Image (cartoon, rainbow, N blue to C red; front, side):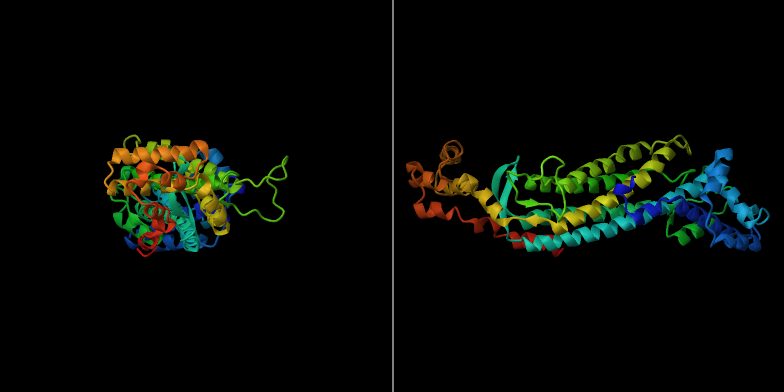
Length: 434
């Protein structure tokens, strides 16, 4: 991922230096376990740890790989250059490349998940704070982009909180599912390496041994992981899209913070564009782009092939780096979001009381009018508001069929905004006290 959409902690997980350090730790821990079993000399295992403070030379490894055409062999050759050929004689004993590659990939994904979980905690904190700030800020709810009935802006944010909280639970489950390692040798039979080695290495790396790994860790685990990231990305986009709509000039109920010195357009000095949330919409597409390839990686040939490898070398860093950036950006948007309560009320009143039509409909049915007739009466008065700019309450009071069933006081009662917000505290308790 390009630096513009990258943050250093997540980028560091995917650096060659980090990758080779994990490779080294796997090999060193495996040597310890082999020595404990008496398979290799203890002094040979101890000699491997001579490299524990060494910075591996990425350029040198690349130089060796240019000849060997094999990245793991290139690394092992470089390790032997550091600790000596004799001491390196028992490194990688009974192991296969996938033991190193797959276990490392899962370590990286676990570390990435931990950063993403921390990102989500900060996002949830920001959403919760703003939700309580606007718990009673009344605004219009929309369906199909059209005015429906009153809600509060706090409820919109409470929905975002509940959605992201579900995503956090999903990510925790995905982290647990991906946190496995395999040191099982060629075709995964442990023929040349004891399962105790795998148990030891996994324990040192904070992983669980993969129950059956063929020669690779099963890719259904990775498919579930990247699918979870795709769902989180979609939630980021949903929230971003809502903010983009609210910032439209014709709506302007909320907008991204516009900082001093910021420019909205190279041509039009008046512009204040929702650039951050538009950016988030695009980044979400990049995150979801990894989902299908990750699922297609599940179907490998027999005990292994490497058709998954090129995919994962891309989607591993790109997807986690992108989502890390997106979550941090969304947190900043929510934290500084500018909200306009007066505009929300003005927009809601734009069609002069139409948002109360359902209450009038229900009152008529409870007064003995059939639902079909009640709907007809309410709709014909509502259409005058749409088409003639009339006032809904005035029209209802002037409709003899309506007033035959409801008194003027009963009609007026149905225009009380508080009716629509009376259960906000109940919803907030469900969301935030669970």
